[in-house]
Image 1 (tube, rainbow, N blue to C red):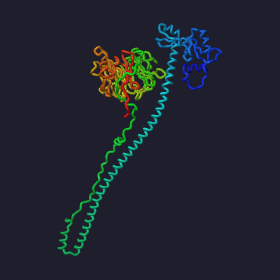
Image 2 (cartoon, rainbow, N blue to C red):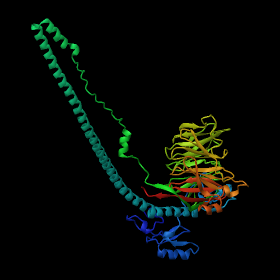
Image 3 (tube, helix red, strand yellow):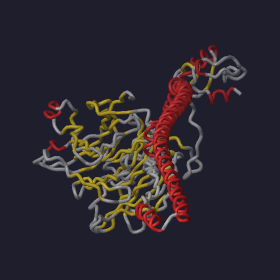
Image 4 (cartoon, rainbow, N blue to C red):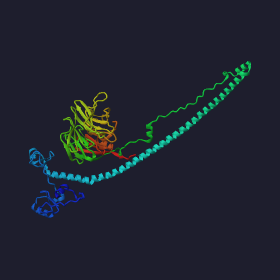
Length: 573
């Protein structure tokens, strides 16, 4: 039971131990079961105060320390090559644990370290991570849970208010419609009364005329029976139908009703627009350097992991793909996997690494458990630059075959969806596809080093525009490229020649349509003072933006990766 406690709670301080009952840690000395306060790092033995005194007298060369500062004994791990040997040496050159026989055979000229010391140092780092999680991450996460609960309540309240507002607006519109209908009905009543009055007048006039005609008929009949011919003839001439007035046929006035066109959008506009907006809004601010990380080699390309991972991947001239933490410590290495002049790796929204190998015409995926699997085989095309879209998870891969260059779109499982290669005139869009990024309007932006320009196409592959640098610089060679939350395109100019010198080292800020806005990082000290900006690292090559909207810049001349802040949050209007 004591050993179990020893293994699980190796260096946990008392204030971090869960509130569960545990038996105290017993002394290892035979027949002694007192509380252990000391530990011998030499022979890995627990001991109480009395036994420590005896042990120190008998073993003056042993290192005895307080129990909570003890070193763990290196666990037994058998060498796969030499089953009779335990792994007990750490090769610093290869960064690999080996047994003494392997070291003597294959690593004799390498620098080595005590594996037990490396093991305990690793345990201390793990404990540091655990402590950090307990002290910082978990309390912060609990605060976030509480904050999320309040946000949820606020969201429910806001949406309820939205619904009330919409109902109120609908009621106001209904009142307006009812008012319009009332006015129109009033107007219809007036018109109807006018038309009916005209009809009644015509009816009265016609009825009066009928009575007049009936009297004439009666006169005719009376004269015909008694009058003399000469008198009858005279009566006929005086009352001939030719002299009778014929009334016009009654034609009522017609009502013309012109209905307005019912426009649903115009009605919807009266309610206002419903959309989901980001809770964060940003605007450009003066750029400031906030931190830096020193990597093992010069950073030619960077791929940040999601912020929760607290890691990033970098590659350089060595061809190794290396994962670092934020202090620059190596967490994982994939040897001889990268062509350094291209953006050959990217990290998905789920935190998985994707990278291309042009020698094997393959795209690989590295999962969270560090296993490496084939994802895509590109046939006769050599894959280069790669980008994982945070919008839909699609994978964009730049590929070349002889003089042809293209971008192929795959879904997240590696199924081919689209090729982007030609413009509307049948010409090649690209001379080289060195770095790829996607903008928030789904435009695909490419650094074409051979053509010395940035080429931008729509998601469907239609050419939009290209950018060939600023007129103030004598040369332009685009390398790292990225986009931000505002749709800006950021590209670094890594051009280097005698006539240009460091004056071309800069980061250009473009709008979403490719118009130059400013030098985000300026190319020399004088200009940086003039513009109150930051001076760009010499010959920048790597460029990316992390989850916190910070700009990361790495270059050809230094292993230091600089981190800048150039966006600031604005109040929601």
